[in-house]
Amino acid sequence: MASAPFSRILHVDDQPDIRGIVKLALGKIGGYEVCSCGSGEEALAAAPGFAPEILLIDMSMPGMDGMELLAKFREAGIGAPAIFFTARIQPADLERYRAAGAIGTVSKPFDPLKLGRQIAQIWAENLPRSRESAP
Image 1 (cartoon, rainbow, N blue to C red):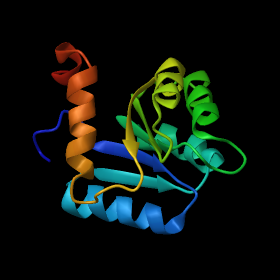
Image 2 (image 1 turned 90 degrees about the vertical axis):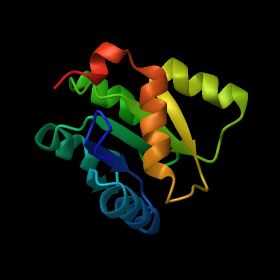
Image 3 (image 1 turned 45 degrees about the vertical axis):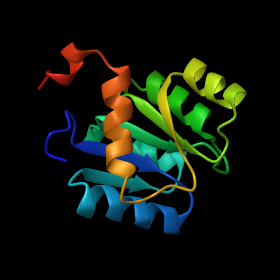
């Protein structure tokens, strides 16, 4: 995905199998640099050093759900666009995610071969062109 305007994705999911599939799909297949974290606390600790350009956050995690984690990222000054990863995609849910600050949603189950393109498409549809050309 060399043409994408971003290269670093921080993925947070409490399920090791999902983390492995996402890392393979986005890293090996998509060509992105991926930091995989198993909890909100782990992600908050990893984010400053990794400097993510996209946050891919599972909504249903024990301890801290996706919306709580996104709020904590913002409190910590991490402003990377967020995409929620969830099986809950009813219109009311999608409105809540947008209101919380997500630029989009990737639904579970997902197609690993299409995941990188989905994220790039969400970015392209939701962020101003001026941001895409930023270094």
